Length: 69
Image 1 (cartoon, rainbow, N blue to C red):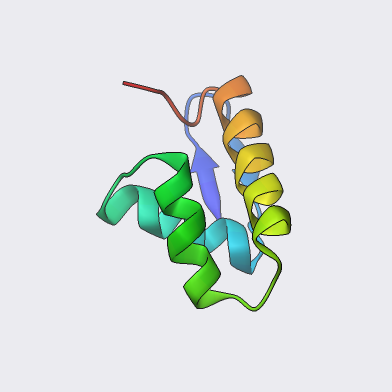
Image 2: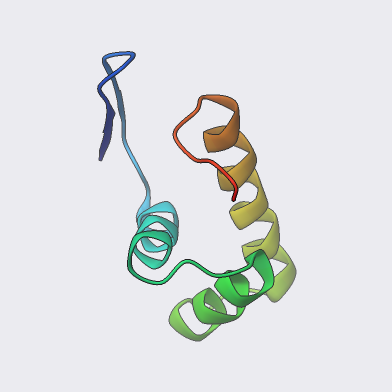
């Protein structure tokens, strides 16, 4: 779970979203490298993982829980 203190909103994360957050907080990397890392962790088609990662990033950018540098 992630808590947005500014908005007072709690986000419940599924297993793959939790893995994305863990990767971003421990070793931020480009989206393609995130997808590669998750492909080794989860048994799912690369395209599905890439779509899920992009959706997560887009959603969290939109609500301000993630920024780009």
